[in-house]
Image 1: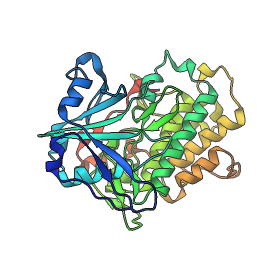
Image 2: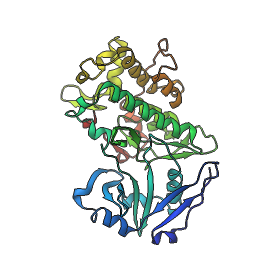
Image 3: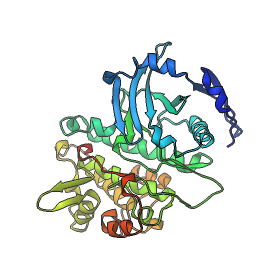
Image 4: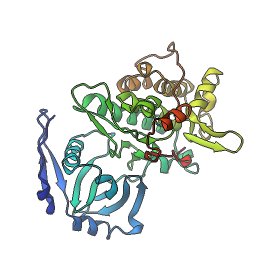
Length: 358
């Protein structure tokens, strides 16, 4: 897949930029907005329009002149100062060509001086982490949790195996799964995403991600692969089914990791006890057990034993029977923190997994 995109000087006014796709698919229009358009849409980025905030910037809701409601992400200037303008445009152009039901749609961008803005479809039900707060979790029936899990898996499988170059997200977690008005999940926030060209098995890059979701081999070596996303998805799957936080803390035990808890319960042959109690046992036991087991298969310490995302989808839908498949010991970043610190990976690149996301 190759792209042509405008020079920076073209970004001084609003226009529609054609992203040229030579893969044989239809061309896609990528909108370039002016700062004034986004300022008016968001009421000058009013505080009441703020709908999210994270390490990569603040997200506001806004209404465009044509009536469309969008989400406008204001990227931090510090982040963009670490990346060249050409790289920024290249990544935006690539992501603008990624279309899938379970990926958030990027409508366009804006470059205004040192400021960077991304414009996405607005998601009515916010993020999974926000909607999955304890007081709201009862709304998430087993059917809804199953459909969300499958949707996320299909979106990641598309990135890993159907897009060329392949895309590794690097930060799969509950806060980066958005839900539209029908609770259809959309993988979002490609601020850490990396493109994999020439069939590369892995690339070496700085370690970044979220503690609890981060694969241990990537945390130690900086070698990023598609199996790093598989690990993160496995953690997310356990979180969705169990309703538990990825990283919990209490005074007696200190930090407790969901992956470790699931492994203990699997070995004790009581894995179904991990299913969220708010479901009041209103779920198909065989299906719930299968989902939890797939989660554990995705977080195995040995990367070669983890399934590809397309295989994970088939396991979840029972197209691949995993009844006789054994699960090996999971990997845990918690076990490797001393090594990571010893190798001087920047700890400030890691954000804590929110305990409210489960």
